Image (cartoon, rainbow, N blue to C red; front, side, top):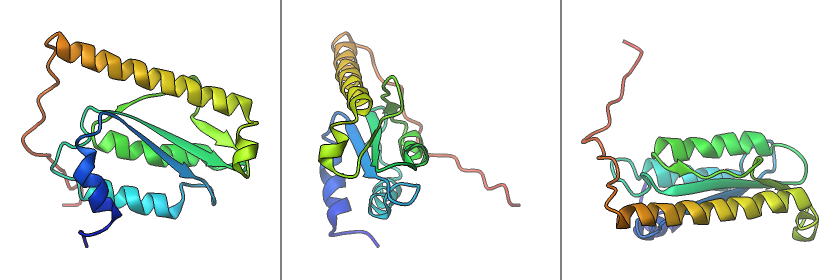
Length: 151
């Protein structure tokens, strides 16, 4: 099930990244299937490692018309599962348009993305300043406890 693909290539270098922005187009009221498959594999096969823990991350979507909020909610779950620090903007991080030239005319969406970028840069600088000042990150638990409610 695992090995020798783009997900494994990503996970080999992901530990070296300081932050992430995950983006997905929306086709049928949710994140694109190819993006979902990638994130399912990347985050599931990463269980037990702390590759993503406490790293800043954002999710963004692009759609012609609708489905962006559902896709954002889907994508946020991956960040939450991996203890990532979610970076936000002043509105939902989405743009609308059927083609790149239409997306750039979505002035509100473009501004939201710019604010998101500034917020991400600020948070990354703040984390670095904290490290330099000796602020230690929380200790990660030894193992994840899971409860099965069907007994």
